[in-house]
Image (cartoon, rainbow, N blue to C red; front, side, top):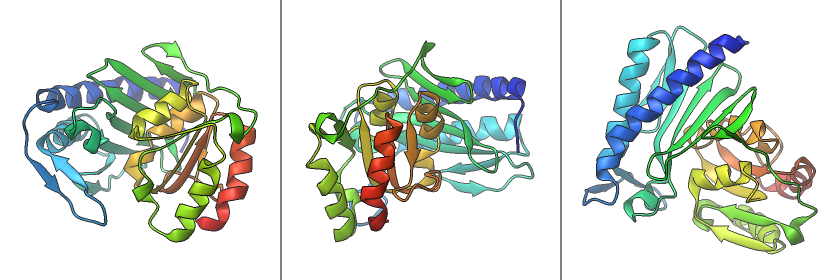
Length: 263
């Protein structure tokens, strides 16, 4: 469905209310002693009371304000609404950073219109940064964001949260073949790295094993700043899985050709 501009503005204001509510729930737990659970899986997958409290706070606001809207969150799963609109929530993207006291985490909030995410927010309350992407562009605290051009991999800064996310040999080899050509490769960052790409400080992000709530809020931010983000084969990234994001559209096209065989 197509959302009118005035409705986008309304939903953006509400998404910022959600971000504030999540921040209030999260901040008492950051750099404090807290219990950490492991969700299980092939790598350590932590969850804390902060994750759960933040998602609950956002869900309650959505159900009160827009009871027909769907909700898809990391901690409490999916509620199908009667509307085509769905809020996609990751209360703390970067929980591993959160529990180690690093500020490389954020609350992700997306609004999906039934076809794609049209609005995205990444809120980092500890640093006081709020990244917003919409059909009108992308901003951090009101400052317009633009990605940067990059002539080639030999001059590129590349980021990935962890090499452990490449679960198959073919994906690990595909990632390494690209990363080895980059000027600089850095690990860590989670959602923060994508916002640095939108801000023009990072050129490439290559990841895998993502969930929809890991990436949907970041799509409007990167696209609004002039970048491109897709799956490795060029299809939509909104379903998670393998993801490649580039600030330079020409470089993105080149990387899809290098990575598509490993999807």
